[in-house]
Image 1 (cartoon, rainbow, N blue to C red):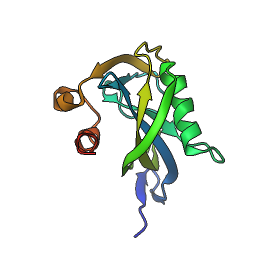
Image 2 (image 1 turned 135 degrees about the vertical axis):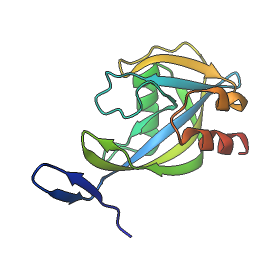
Image 3 (image 1 turned 45 degrees about the vertical axis):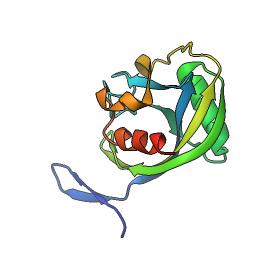
Image 4 (image 1 turned 180 degrees about the horizontal axis):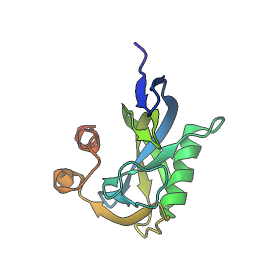
Length: 153
């Protein structure tokens, strides 16, 4: 079944097929803690300002998935990591600038030698948390389920 979104304008209602993206997401582990970033209101393609999420981003066509993840981590945090195995796949369907998106996300465990983060302008804050305490955090809605999968891997 195809997914479409209804976009309402003053003149009419238009059905839109969402733009499809594949994203890699990182559960960066340093000394048993996982890194969370809080999305800034300045992030123009953001839909979760004020909430915490893990590092990640969309794969550029032609880019390898692991290279995408390493690039996104470096851009968003300044960290160098070793990419581990994927442990979860999910999808979400946000509206970005009144355009429907469908994002398929692949979650990987990654390992950092350092916990010294340099934030990009897309994020306001970061924290390292014990993954068992994720329920106490102000996370994007689907991330609690991913943490549960991470804990049982």
